Image (cartoon, rainbow, N blue to C red; front, side, top):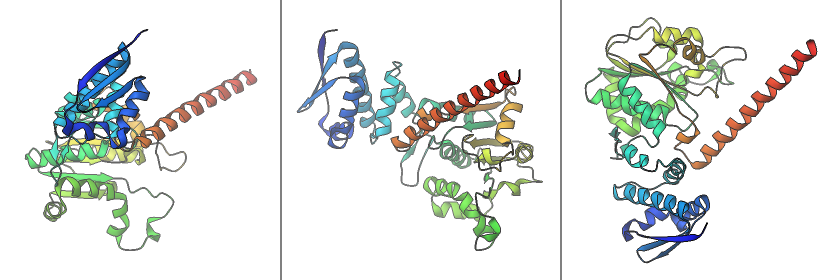
Length: 335
């Protein structure tokens, strides 16, 4: 195919944001789409094959629009725009950007950053119970927390209840220093961190003292009925089937529940079934329950985290295939 070129005008005030430090975003787009970019003053010339030029120009135009809306362009934005360009969905990144859930205490907007996250937020809005399943860094807990705080501020619920299993990972709780609260706080720290960032420490403490916000281990949920509350169960892969059933049967009228977990990071003892795995099988046909499965494409932490998640996915798939092969050979040998 013959080489061609296209010229784009770039507002000078958005160049640094869109191009990245030392033009790192330009270089990434050049490598990924096999084009050459030449910048002179406020114009950009893109050279390459026609189909690649179109993809590159679409990516740049979407990043410029994001910048005009006041966003700080990150490497995750660039990577996601490039991945969407493979399926001609570049425009989706602007639609996602319109959906603001709330603002942090510093005024930063909290919003979904991928199509998977957008679907997750929609499921939380539409369904009474939602399972958010996916690897680390996909925003499962943070977005659920933002939705909970928004519902609380809008008086859609009377309180927020955050819980997670205080699973012992290598150390017995009894050997840790301090009273019971100081023993379990490290397990609940990720929930506190999100609350502080979105709500602010003072507002959180004030509402916690009033009993309007509760952060507690899952064991504390036994024997209660939770009405008019937004309940988040985090790290659900570390529940037992009995714990999960106990939790799901606590839910009362006017409540909304989000259950988050990563099936690949269980801390349960060997041979113990995960309550999350069992619940997904048992409840898969209940229409009122939403299941949103996030993937490595939805990771919004450092791009290296996405690569780590993908590498583990590939390793685990290969290991699973190898086990099946060995099991098949054993069966044939028995015959």
